[in-house]
Image 1 (cartoon, rainbow, N blue to C red):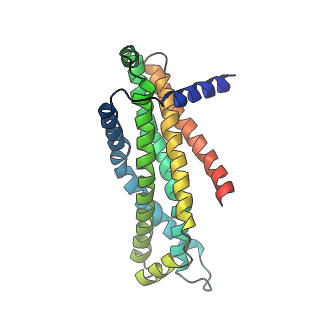
Image 2: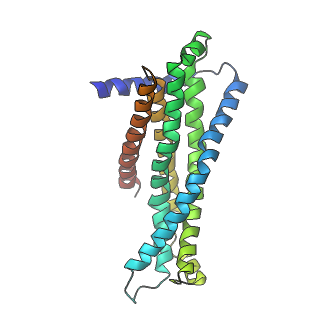
Image 3: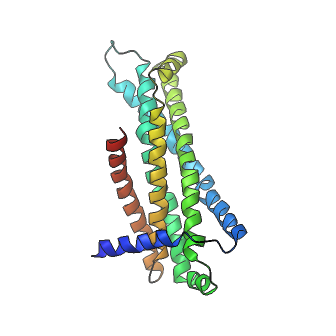
Length: 245
């Protein structure tokens, strides 16, 4: 019954977001603030993960391709498709679930415990629209951009590692990079990134918005939001792969 109760509260929170803004300028300011918090402040960790992710993928692919019948340009193809299809959208979003999700849950939980949300509601402000909706919209805008940046940096990291270690030449890597490329893979990666962005932002907002207690409950809500988001990301990853591929 607890699962159905939480699901019902989650749906009520989502449907309660869609109301006419009381002050459009105030809502726009909050939306831009969340874009900075979710997108720009997460850029550093995304860059580091992506470069090393692509580099490790290139080295491990070269380690397994031992047959002389397989051209070395195949390494670039495998790195490209692995980064675009799985590494960038899934691994980056799992990291963002911990970085962004815990922050959202902690911020809303602190506002709930300190009765700031109650004060806003007394003033006649729809707190779901003002506090939750900008976070979800900002995540839907910035996280797919981070995934695109991650895919580019992952491929660049793979090329740098492969060329620096002498596995392939730059011309061989570039040749394999453009061979048998399917633009549909980019669409698939974006579909996953939008789905994961909604999961991260909505689940974290839900657990933070409905915190009941003190500082200990805020910590538990942040931890639970990260765990649930990661599980749902992996589940959605499988479902999307089964449907779209």
